[in-house]
Amino acid sequence: MRYISTRGQAPALNFEDVLLAGLASDGGLYVPENLPRFTVEEIASWSGLPYHELAFRVMRPFVAGSIADADFKRILEETYGVFAHKAVAPLTQLGANEWVLELFQGPTLAFKDFALQLLGRLLDHVLTRRNERVVIMGATSGDTGSAAIEGCKACDNVDIFIMHPHNRVSEVQRRQMTTILGDNIHNIAIEGNFDDCQEMVKASFADQGFLKGTRLVAVNSINWARIMAQIVYYFHAALQLGAPHRSVAFSVPTGNFGDIFAGYLARNMGLPVNQLIVATNRNDILHRFMSGNRYDKDTLHPSLSPSMDIMVSSNFERLLFDLHGRNGAAVSALMDSFKATGKLTVEDERWTEARRLFDSLAVDDEGTCATIAEVHGETGYLLDPHTAIGVKAARECRRSLALPMVILGTAHPVKFPEAVEKAGIGAAPQLPAHLADLFQRAERCTVLPNDLKAVQAFVGQHGNRGKPL
Ligand SMILES: *Cc1c(COP(=O)(O)O)cnc(C)c1O
Figure 1 (cartoon, rainbow, N blue to C red):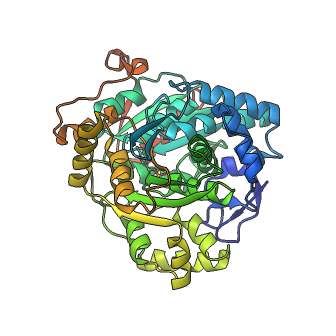
Figure 2 (cartoon, rainbow, N blue to C red; figure 1 turned 60 degrees about the vertical axis):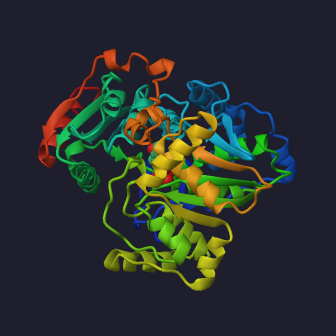
Figure 3 (cartoon, rainbow, N blue to C red; figure 1 turned 180 degrees about the vertical axis):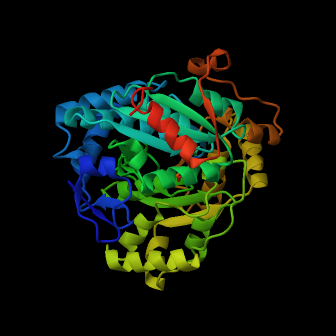
């Protein structure tokens, strides 16, 4: 499989190079040159497969030529073997034809484990074969950091440095990162805010001299392998609910448009998906596009669903590429103009095309808490604030009551206790068994000033399994 850039200028790459690449050299994002398409008979034959076997069948065309079948099978079995629930991604029924797909049974209790557990293992496999080492640098406001660290902790060829704003992440979030101990794991608490952390990651990618020949790899949501891994659970859920002989709808809590873009790809690969609902919080740039063809940058509004607090959606460009007939020059012009003006609209017929599949809703904190309370009252089930936004959007935007509606459950409620408390239902979420002793575990973390040189010096001193590069 070959991958091309959404801006049409960067060289095409194979899977292995895309895995290591991050952004394309022309500033675009990599997408498959040709999407695999499965027949109804093929999809039907996958019904009842264990998760890792389904994953093999769905993802195999994407890694073809880079990862041998036997290796890929073994990696997938290991990856999804670490999930706490035997079904890996179980479905829980909330109401009539309404389901939550629980994507929070992985080690860090959020859906990012599906992609990052796989990404870490794929990286290690490829790097071992090449006899190379890499450094991962990432910034987190709380949630992604632990999933990235958990995904890379067993990687022999990766040192991972995750920065979080000192004293500005919740204790559960901090402990989920700092209690994972290993020579190759480095938590840095920056005396600054999340944007300061992110700026330092960007600056380090732009000038990698401090790495003395080692290179940086991006594991943020634009990495193609993350999107790829997320396609699988759409197939998994839909197959259990009657696909491919029946259509299914999905409601997806989204920020960077990564998770929902995977659903869009699943549909283009042959899965009958009749509706995709974009569910945002007050940071609603995607809702403004879907409802009114206005993709305009706004300021950041901190919310009770912080993992969706974004100003622009980094994966949206991948949809724009398809809406423009995969014309890289057109996307490039559009993104240049967006960069200059902070505003973007597309031609009417392209927007109408998007609206054939996508609906959207923005839900504020009040609506989020009300939905947590409503669902808890109806069923006793406790939603996390991100998933609650998905439920609210599903209920408002649903096109057909006759078809199953699946809401992606993106996090366990214990990760976001503030929203659950504000919902006023008197129920406190409990840590699951594998994290029950989280507050007793030893932590390791280094506090550094908000200073690029200090951070880069630290990476240089510790980037080779704790030793200097
Ligand atoms: C990252 C995240 C999201 C948003 O996912 P995108 O791929 O950015 O759309 C939603 N919910 C939770 C809990 C997350 O961690």
